[in-house]
Image (cartoon, rainbow, N blue to C red; front, side):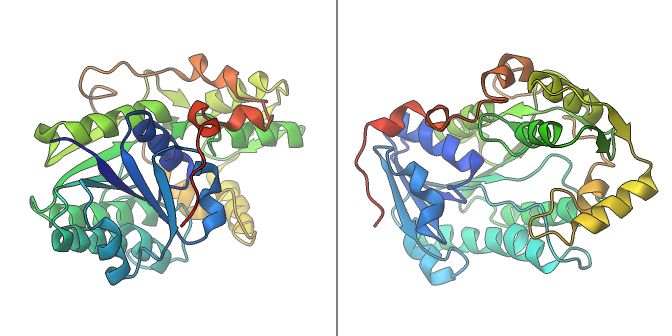
Length: 321
């Protein structure tokens, strides 16, 4: 199947921007719906990308957006929600109801392919509302059968320029003389965002990946403490790490929940009770995973405006419509 037009749901964020860049490189027409135009302004210079202001949670709007597409890629994911059972209303809306609406829209418009980004560790019995809601979203995708033909990707935490993972720890290292760290022994297998993009593209082009679920990780497993120590040294601000006991970590997270944009919640801590590690090979299709150490030095500590642009962003005059 030749992929000529793709709709990226949640395409204005960190991962979506990388996917849009990759698709633009291979001359695929990309539509990125967004709630506010300003959120996707950085995609405008890409020569094959169109940005449109739209509410993807409205079924009629969603059906119009995906009409004529060869594939839809759902990248929507949130880390915080009001609490609920088995998960909160914000998780329900983003991780469960939206995938259901996307499947319905793809069926109505006869879109043949759907790539759904879930999360490593997603499980109906997961310790956190986040992981349980991600599993419920996968159930909605499974319910599609083969209309559309779907593929689910379960990446570990992702890193790359403009990530919200390594850059967060670099910022904290510059801001505090000591780093109190919850879940210091939690294990992660961080995956490079461009490796995730490569898998997405492979799945779009290979019809034999339909109906499959792939876990995605990097070449090495780290404890959270090891990651924070490495990043703080790389940022030129090595800091002592103060591991927090569970009770104190929960108290710290509870206080952070009062912030407008909390960097940690109690639900995030519960997610870290499950190792964020793949069960088999790090990447499918024989792809070689990229190590943090080969990429992070190129952007940790680099806050220059020009360095944040991908190469293709200088060559287009696309406009939001």
